[in-house]
Image (cartoon, rainbow, N blue to C red; front, side, top):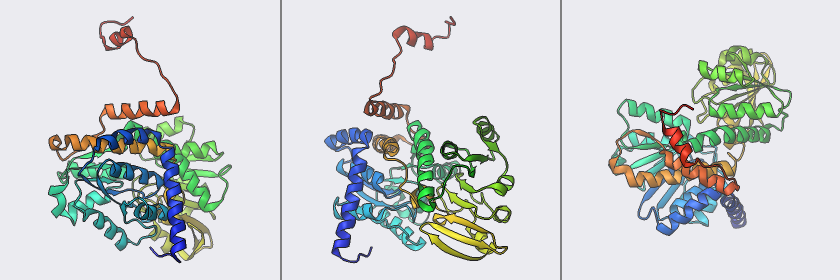
Length: 420
C-alpha cells in the first residue's frame, strides 16, 4: 500500500483506530465473550487464518481471537470490501498481520489468501468459502493440519454443502450463516440497511416513488425489500422458489418473472447466491436510466459480459457508478462493479448487527476446538445452546427482560396427555 508520506500513513492509521474502537464500543455481546476468553486464554497456541470483509467490525472479531491467545492472519474475502484504514491500523497499531487491500486484482486477491494459508493454520474462518476451496485444490498439502472451519455466508455454505455431499470436504465446518442469531438479523436487517446505505452513497438518488425490483427472497432479499418499501419504493420480487414467492406476495409485494419486472424497473438489486440473474435478454428490455446493484457474495449475478457486449461505450461517472450506453442510446448503470454493493460502496452491516454474528463466530471457534476430534468432515449447524447464549446476552445489552415458564408450564408443554 502506497502513501504520499508518513503523515498520510499516520492519518490513515488514526482513522482506522477510531473506526475499530467505535465498533468495539458498540459490540457489547462480543465484548462480554471477549472478557471471558481473554481471561481463560481460550485460543492459546492456535493459529487462525481468516478471510472476511476487512473492516472495523471484522477487526474487533480478529482482535478478540488474537487477544484470547491465537496467532491470527487476516485478509478480505472480496476485492472491494476492504477498509484500507482498518487494514493498515491492524498491521501498524494492533500487531495483527493483515493482507487485505481494497481494489486488488484477481492475482493479488489469491496471493493474499495464500499468504494467510502460509501460516499453516489450525482453523480457518471464511466468508464465501474461497479460503476453504483453495485448501481443497491448490493447497492440499495443508489439509492434514486443518482441524476445522467456520463459514459466514449463504453462498459459502451452499458451496460447502455441495462439497460434503460429494465427499470432497476434508474437515468439519460450522455453518455460522445458518445460526438463528446470524441469519435472522445479519441477513435480513443487516443486508437490508447496508444495501440501502451502499446504494445511496454510490448514487445520491431517491428511493421513494421508484419501481424497485429485488431478485431473490431469501433473508437478504426480505431485508432489502422491507427497507425499500419502508423508504417509499414500489417493490417487485422475482423468485424461483414457489414457497418464497407466496411469502413475498403475502408480504405485500408484486411477484413476477425478471423478464417482466425488468421492463418498468428503475432499480434492480440481486441477492440470490446464483449466477446470471440479470442477463442480456433482461438488459435489452430495460428502460433508460435503470440502476443495477448486487448484494450477493459474488459478482456474477448481473452479467457484466452482457453489459459490455451490448454497450457502445462505458465510463465511470461517480465513485462506484459505471454508466453503460447501449447501442440504441439507452443508458444503464452498474454499481460497484457488480460486487456486493453494501460493502463495496458502503460500510457494511450495522455494528450492532455484526456484534451478534461475530459473537457466534467466536463461540463456534471455541466449540470447534473443543469438539473437532469427534466431528466428521461435514457441515454442522450451530448448536442451539450457542444461539441461546448470544440471544440472552443481546437482550441483556439492550436492557430487555423476558418471561420465564413456570414449573407447571414446563410440565404442560412437555406432556402429551394434557390437552386442556
